[in-house]
Length: 451
Image 1 (cartoon, rainbow, N blue to C red):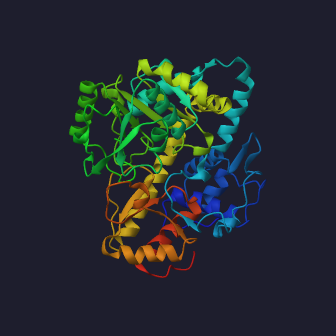
Image 2 (image 1 turned 120 degrees about the vertical axis):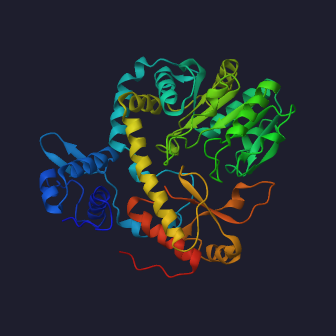
Image 3 (image 1 turned 60 degrees about the horizontal axis):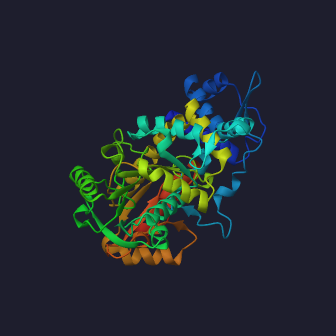
């Protein structure tokens, strides 16, 4: 039933074979898979390899494990035949736009279990305007061990995602008299809007190879918004000397640093650098969310705040939003408490590292490079002299390969043309064809027929 791709590592090949069998209908919803021993003999791989792959697919909700009955294709798994072509109006055929994780790896089964447990416990939930105490307690421990954040549960406010967190923080600071904010240029599209809506004067802080130019900050600036661990979208990190300089600026001027740690868990070459917040907990607001680790649609984010900002942000939340969905808060607390959240992140870190390597190798084969850290879920492709030709091809085939131009993320500082490519969005079955389509577009080659 299954056929292994000999060019892939064994674990990846087994996973790819199972997914392909589901996609083309050989393995139908509700169908029982052969036992791990039988599959190991059939495919010529170690039984442990089969067990590891099926465990991952069960965690994602692709397969179901039934006690004393075996492993089955999930009855709820969506038909995968449609992946061969995106329906009209649903986006490009090959979606390499940045900003979302791989949807197919969402741990559906574990999340549903956590939701059921959360529903059973909802009547006894300990919560206030800052959010679920259970989630805040789990986050305080998780952020300390995963990102080096120095905090306690009572300094965390749960928000409905990063943009909502920015709006609440801007409203709270404006109510306290702040009026000026500096934001990296380039940066997340629309990041300045919550601040300008709250009446802030927004200045653009140019980013170079060492990160944001901290030397441009002065006593008139009340706050600065940074992505110090992995700059979006250029991909570098804030240099150590600039990390020290921005903390010195905040201390000397009573300024506030807003640290957007949007994908801090995903560094592939070594352990991630600790969050900047650890250097000055009373001068740094640490912002995080599950938008890159799980899914943005869960609407879950958090602010780790200096003590004097907790009450103003809670009051802004109570007045403006009412907080994040409580069942989702309790379910995330359950995933963290049981270790499932970190196991999921480790699985995805391996997968995204593989994808980034594949993207680099594919581009190098046509003479292109992806600068920046070995981190995150996107890459930057400078276009150089080929920019007019490549951009013309993109404009002529808007439904074929979806990427973003760097210009989308710039406001006042011109930069050479480049593409921002998100390598997390395609499904595992569609990822390699998507990269092949991208390299074909960049070099005007015709893609090979699908395998």
